[in-house]
Each structure stands twice: as structure tokens, then as C-alpha cells.
Length: 377
Image (cartoon, rainbow, N blue to C red; front, side, top):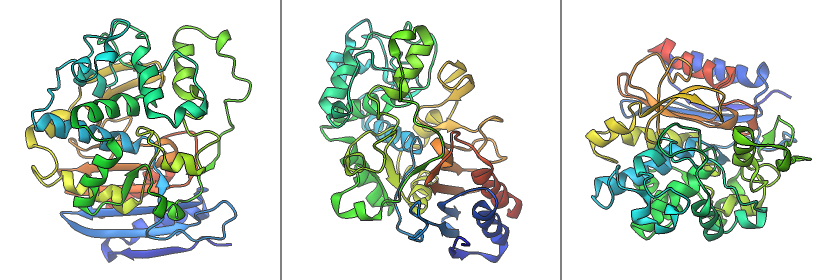
């Protein structure tokens, strides 16, 4: 059965629609959506394929799906807004807001270091269960008690899942509000349909996530691991469902707050978040955003197994992780191919979400659509 493709696309961007359709007919996509805003005007708004593995339910414009690490940038934005408000500074220790975090020699870890993956806690050392995963206080307590995996500030490693509890708890301690509630306020003002913790009334809109990769939690023996290898496996699978394996389509996952991993939204919502960031000063001050999207930490990452560049929650465009051809672009990819970014040079705000999770963040699927947008410019 051919995958349905629906929505609008300016004639200038007809090749975007063609490449998007090819994602289903030739590249294995199951369900997806793409939304492109240029200088405040929507030029591409397409949905395609199926929101379920049985291919019975067509993807709708309001279909929500887990966009994984795309949400890290939105979480960081909440922290940056608190910096703008003068409630915390980038170089303040995390422990000034969260005293328990000082345990084990982490008293000097700054918010800046936390935002750019230099906080030295990409994994929790205490073994946890999925019941712990649903308990915010339990998770943040275990994270605070974790001894750093290296001397904080001396190197980086991608905080794949702990990033959400680390930055999210700073946001909670400083503002007095959970990050899901604060994101709802920011997103609501931008008309952006993105969530950390999907409201019960909206869970019926969630697409089924389909994993192409095997469940690596089966038979995993942490006792046989040590050093960076242990750190990496714990970062993904402690608790077992921290990366969403085995729980991703459950009501508990949808409603929980695991902010670095279980943000949900539409492609339109993702693009509107970035469109807001392209309006100078609307969401965060111009100077602070410029700092946040500039390189803050470069080098080899033992989690991602390659040289990477981190900003403050946002990833600056690089040759390896390019959002488009223009320098100054910034955003974040998510597991499986979801991506959101802004290109100030071209005025582009872009969102792509999908439900077929392949074991990589960049793919021929999102790349083909991004390239088609720029070919039309």
C-alpha cells in the first residue's frame, strides 16, 4: 500500500514534497511530518505515512511523536530564560540551586558545564529500575549522589539521558516549577505543539514508535563492564527504559517527564519553536542566544564515539552534524532522525519528526528533505 502524503507545499518547494514522498516509497520511513517556515511564513507543511506499525492509521497534522534529543534544546532554553531573568548565572555552580548535587566532588560544576555536557555525570551509578524512572525525586536524587566519572570540566561526554534530569532539576529548583509546565508556557506563547509529559487528554494523538534496532537491554551484564564502557551502557540503560526501550509506547512514558528523551510534538511545533528563536529577543536575549549556539566544548566524546561540538543545549552546525550549508545554523538532532533547527542567514526554521526509529540521528531521510529545502532557496 502506498503511503499517503498530505498537506501544503509552495510550488517553489515542490521537490521537498517529492523527496518527502520518496522517504516512504524508497527509504523505509513509516510515518513522518515536515514543516518549514521562512522569514515567518510557512512554505512546507506535509504529513505522510502511518502513525501505527500496522499501517492503518494515517499520520495527521496534529499527530504527536517522541522526538528524543530534539527536546534537549528546548529544555536548555528554559534554563537560559532563567539566566536572562537574573535568577542564576551560567557560571554559577549547579549546587547553588541544588545543594545535594555537590556530593562526590561536584560542588564546582557550573550551569555552563552542565549545559554543554561537561558535568561528568552522563550516567547514574546506582542501579535503578523502571519504577524509579517514573519518580522525578528518585531519579534526581540518584543523579545528585553519583560520583563524577571524570574530573568535572576537564572533558565532555554526551549526557544522553541524564541531561534531562540534570537541567530539568536546575530549572525546577530555580523557578519552582517542573520543566514540563514551564515548557508548556513557552510553547503555548509560540503556538508550538510540543510537550514534556503529554497531557492525558492529548495522548490519543501519539504515534506508535517503531524500533528498527534490537532491544540491547536483554542479557546486559553491567558487572562485566568498567570505565567508559560501563559509563556508556549505564547512560543508556540505567534504568533499563531510560532510552525508552520497552516503555516508549506506554501511557507512563507518554505522561512522564524524562526531558532529554521523551519530549513529544509535531513537526509544526518544532519549527515554530525555532521560528520564535529567530525573532530577536522574543524567547531569549540576543546576546545570550548567540553565546548558547556558539561552540562551548569540542573534542572526542566517549558516548558518541566521535569528535563533536556542543553549545549550551543547542548544537552549532558542523560538517559532521550539518543542519544546512550556512554557518550560524543551530538546533538538535534526535534518535532515529527527528531534527529541529534554525538558520538565521536564510531565515529558515525547520522541523522533522518520524516514528520509525533507526539507530542513528542523521539519515538519508532527513538529509534528503533538508537538502531539497536549500536547493529551492
